[in-house]
Amino acid sequence: MATRDSWVSNVGFVLAAIGSAAGLGNIWRFPWLTAGNGGSAFLVVYLLIVVGVGVPGLLAEFVLGRLGRQTPIGALRSLTGSRWGSALGVFNVATALVLLSFYSVVGGWTLRYVLASPSGAYFDQPQQYFGAASHGLEAVGFHLLFLGIVAAIVLFGVSRGIERASKVMLPAVVLLLVGLAGWTAMQPGTDAGYAFYLGFDAEYLAANVTNVVGPAAGQALFTLSLGTGAMLTYASYLDEDVSLPRDTLVIAISNTFIGVLAGLVVIPLLFSQGIDPGQGGPGTLFVALATAFASLPGGSVLATSFFGAVLLAAVTSGINLLETPVGTLVDRLDVSRRRATVLTTLLVAVTGTGLSLAGSAFQFVSGTLADLLLSVGLFGFLAIVGWLLRGEAIAEFRAGAGRFAPLAEPWLLTVGWVLPVVVLFSLTNTLASLAGVSLGLGVRAIVAVVGTTCCRLAVTTRTDDLRDLQRSLRSLR
Image 1 (cartoon, rainbow, N blue to C red):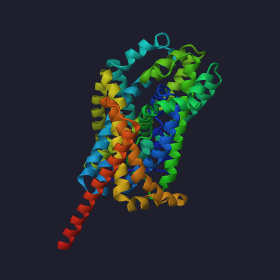
Image 2: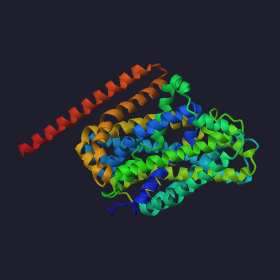
Image 3: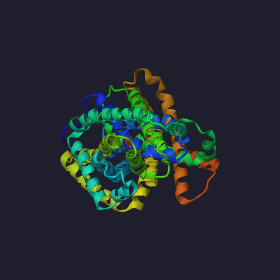
Image 4: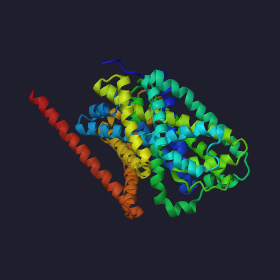
């Protein structure tokens, strides 16, 4: 088997992980979800979930990756010593493939808008242009072109491809967004947008908290790439002396900053043009902003800059999602990176083409299905770290942690009890909404607590039985 690739520097890992998190989830998904769920009310809930769930959850995935030293299937099988670990790994890889399937479609939209922006081709009829661009044969073509760009970078490996690309693209995204946010702040009529986005609306939150929690939790998991095994894969290439808690904080804070920054560009700009940002759904970024850019001086330059930033962010996230199945084929089947990249890209090309042609399927996969898959994947990671590994997880947390080492035990308590309840509560919300069932806040909380307790008992009891059996077999020898 060939020598396993690794990061040349810790900075490269951090930038790649931030780039993965701060992709379309922040710039495409975050603004329209925020606008459609009460603005500041959604923002507050989202930030709380990022801090309370996202940070310890991301750290748990990093611990699994560095401890397992493999991609999800191999790492989880070796760490759990059971087939259900392998099954969860397969589920994670499948989740990454599902997400990349719709992600590359949206990446294709973005690529098309970058190419069309200098001429303002979509300024006259933005709704009609997006309708033609979002689904159909032309959408398939741009989806394949975007996927080809991502595959070309992954083909060069971790150090020569992913790390080098991330060191260039992520700073470019931040610089473009900072410039656009500054320009937006100088435009007339943005006050209402800032008030909607940043002025806390306690009344709306109190009346709609159960409706806001589900999308906010889904967005937090989506934007931090939790539950797919993508961050686990990135961490598997890390050295032992890296401080996982420190890097987790840097990545989570940077990712949140970029998401909030994107909101400071999109939401006030749309308000300044009298456009309701909450009405466009997934097309908000393309239809509403196209309308805004068309009416502004230098609109084509602004549009090119903005969609260029979105494209760079999309590529960094696409790289992360593609690396998970590619790395799995390399690790598990000893397939060459070139062949693994080609095979995985062909598969995503087919599934993404299906979503490019079926608008209703795209809506379901990019929304409800993505939230469900991420929640289940993260719940599995938390169960392994908090219920099975425990002492090993604490040791991995402390390795290179420095001044963060005393936080290991409180972190494990959070991962083992608090976070599974929160994730299961969010999962219950999503399933209830999908089934059209109305459950009160108290009922959902009870389901989450009881469900977590039952799952923990089942997992730990089975694991203890297996360990007793292994000890008995060793004694017979």
